[in-house]
Length: 223
Image (cartoon, rainbow, N blue to C red; front, side):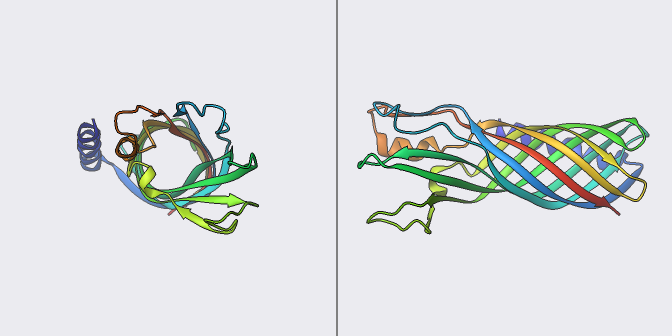
C-alpha cells in the first residue's frame, strides 16, 4: 500500500508538472488542533487510560501551485507539523496524571484544487508524513523516575510513516495573501504495533487502532 501510494503520487505529480501552464510558489503557517481517534487497548486496564483530547500545535512550510487550467491546479507542499494529543491515567497511588503527547512530522500533502470562482479553491488530496520526534510531557507530576518538567522520548512507540487524506478550502486575495482551513484524516495507525509485540509476546495484551486527526487553519502568501 505504501509503495502504491508513493508511486501514484510521484506519477501524478510528474504528469502535472509537465502539463502545468503556470507555476507559483508560496509560504504558509498556522495553528493545528490535533487529536487521535481509535482504541488504545490494554487488556485488564480498560479504565486506567482516559480518552484522548485535542491539543494545540502549529505548522509551517512552503508550497508550489501548478496551474493546469483556469479551474484546476495541483499544489504539493512541504510542512513541519506539530501534532499529538492530550490524555491522562491514574498511577499506582491513584493520582491522576495529565500529559501531552507531542508528535512532530514533516508532512508532504499533494492537493488537487478546484476553483469555482476567482480566488476561492476547494481542495483535496493525499498526504504522507515522516515522524521526526515524539515526546511525552507530564504536567504537575513527578515521581522517582522523572520530574514534571521532563520530556520523555517516546519515538520508538510510534510508526515512522503516516498516511492520510486532506480536505479543505482556501481563499486568495489579489495581493497574494491567502487563508485556508483543512482537515487531515489519518489512514494509518500511529502506534508501532511491532514494538508492543516484542514486549507482549503471545499474551495479546495490546491492541491499537489510533489514527491522526488534525484541523489546520493557515495563512500564507503566494509570490
